[in-house]
Amino acid sequence: MSISLPDMPALLDRAKACGVMIACAESCTGGMVAAALTQLPGSSALFDRGFVTYTNAAKIDMLGVSASTLAAFGAVSEQVAREMAQGALLRSQAQLTVSVTGIAGPGGSEHKPEGRVCFAIARGSEVVSETQEFGAPGRDIVRKAARDHALSLLLRAIS
Image (cartoon, rainbow, N blue to C red):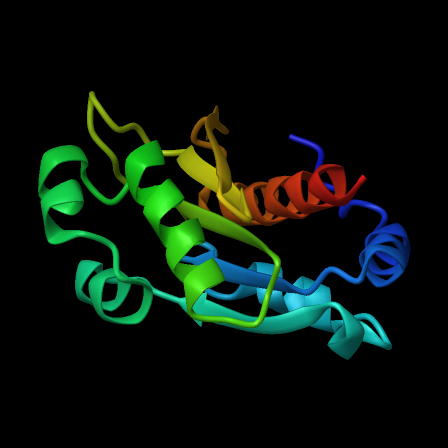
């Protein structure tokens, strides 16, 4: 699996041009999206904050994810990704948020295999979610692929 960061200067330029501030809500990536965004000089013009919510309790406490949504669908679900993105939007100064929740590995189950990662983008009242299956190439590769996909989603959302 080839991993490449999206065009980060383009992301910065587009966010600045549109006056868009970004926040992220991360689980399996553990802050990798925020780290990539803040590597850019001038990133304070586009990045407001990041929420690393690795446990269900953190998702509930920090982002307002519903315990009933977690119970019904599990942390690795588009429903939870959507609530994470919405929660980050409500708890930040951002106009655009991305969320990431998944199973980086090792492990997983028949119903939620290793490499399954759910994403959501929230902007205003619009929330779009999707699931990517990265397979089981190893924890590090899944996390980097999830980071890069989240950044690509942000870039597309600003375009």
